[in-house]
Image 1 (tube, rainbow, N blue to C red):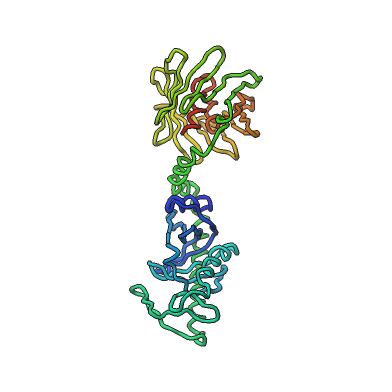
Image 2: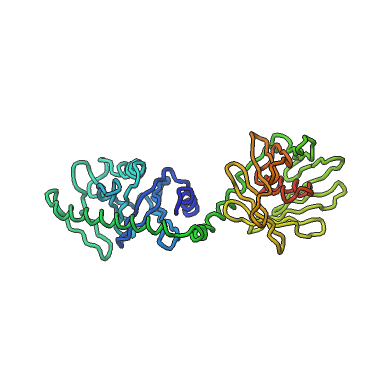
Length: 372
């Protein structure tokens, strides 16, 4: 079922603008079809995101300057607004009071009494002036008076019946549609969301070091930023260097030998060792990643609250990542602490259960999720 989070993402993908207000509602199209979804306003647009019976979501985007308000009314589910746009006559209906506050206030603002005569906006105390208005092909408009209430009542009853039948049908459809079908319908949206928000996780690296300690408090490594795209690492008695290139991160030994490479891919990222063998690939899946070698699935990393849950290929828990302020805790499937990291990314730390014996890869991933 279409969620508010997905609706916001769909609108941002379609308009490159974040909605100012968004709330649930119903939309009756010029063809008389009623769909359920979310209505939203951006600085200059009126948008409606809806899901059709096949489970596919779509976005209707209208310039607010092109939307001509006709009238408001009371429907079975709340306030309704009739308006004209380039595609014909539409009607929005609010499922919650916040819809009235959001969309209704926008229409009232557009319909202020200072509007010049001859427009299509509802004026205070009267009917809309439709002079000079030419309806879209296939539509007819017959002027009436305030005393012609019979046709108006009949029209309201018809709209109410359409809205009720549409809502009942939609709820019935939603109750029988399987979770698998819904997940498939929105897999592309979720994948895009992960890809676009990947750089949103920032780190304390700009303020100092990333420090990783084992469960007993012993320092495993320290990462410090030297310059733009360059880091240094201390681990035990060794000193490594990290170089950031346009599409990858390289971890090198003190002698300059490449230990690990993490390369950005369309599907996520790929980690290779010194001889270019694949350690594993991280592929975007739902709210996380699928982890696999070239041929074998190793498991999955999936967001859970403010942290991550890590499972093997059979679905058994092998790790969990939680946060406590600036400290990240990585535990194994039994709840034992693998390490504590201060100043890094929880997303990068979520792959450590697959890399317990590869500190070089852990270091590379922590930097990768800062830079990419």
